[in-house]
Length: 435
Image (tube, rainbow, N blue to C red; front, side, top):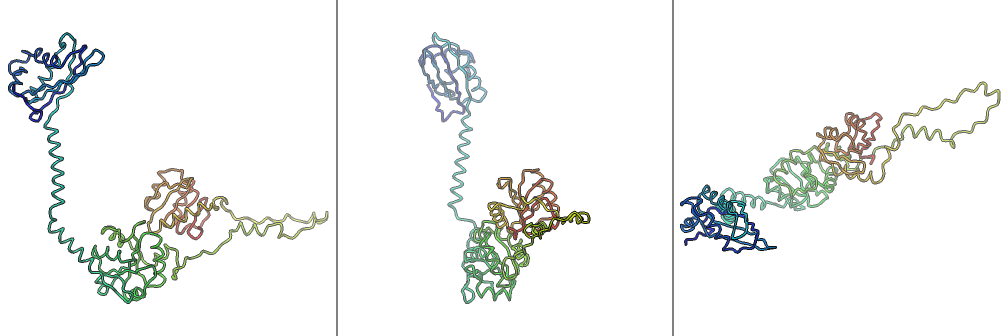
């Protein structure tokens, strides 16, 4: 009798069998051949199909438990899908096996070619990946690698301090000042040849001399150390422009796109001084301490400082007039002006972290950050939250529109670099000098 292996089959019929009694595997196979004989005609007779190799070996797996037999019937087929479906349906007419009632249910007809096709696709992907990794790169990749390595070899020593610099530092009218040698290598790799390193936090004399002859752009890391370097160079050198890496990143970590984006968003030295709140010597500006009208009146009216008045006589009572009370200037509730040490610390750190980002942080009552948004989206974001905001810290100025919106939504604090609002408001507006 010819047999067909599952490897050569196109379809496999999976069936479940349930028998109310105890039977053996040969009984099931005999019932399949016997009860389907003559049912489907000569062309689909199971014995003839198996003899010609169109139906493979019928696999029967049975388990006996508690006087009942359950199992699975697997029939491989190389017929077409229509004939295979007819053969599968014919199995379900079997109702008895030996002396016991039985029920056969076709679970599924599996197309072997689909699983083979999936295997072929996955294997082809793996082979293509190996081929791509092991073969030589194309000419464009080779030229890029060579030019990149040549650029990184072009680092020269400049000035008496032997600072790391690019080869075009003398030829160019502009120069980019960075912190260290690794930053110079990164910029050289991406095509910037007019770059020079400070090699530390203190400004070398070579940089001071260059700043008098060339337009200098200071490019620092996006951390607190970068702010300190900006303050240092603005006070001792003639810096024209300032730019920072994105928050939390160093210049040597930036991609080419990030470098170009940072340089395009550079600001003038005067604007950097205003943003940092420093004077021409690099020192932080201190706002004068001003006492409110309320505090002045309060001091003037303290009982210990007022002269004691004698009780008037009966004649004096007739001519005395009531002593006029001093008018007190309106003032918001004191509770809004008072911040706890924790709040002051959190707000101060947030303002420092936001420096140069042109963004804003929104806080809830527990001082959790609800979100960080650009200044351009602050108004729409605050309106969408519609309440639940305790404070907003922003890298910019507080204007009247923002104060009106904060009053409407009952926001307690607005913390910013500076404020354009002069009138008294329910909202406590805090600037860097107050923190």
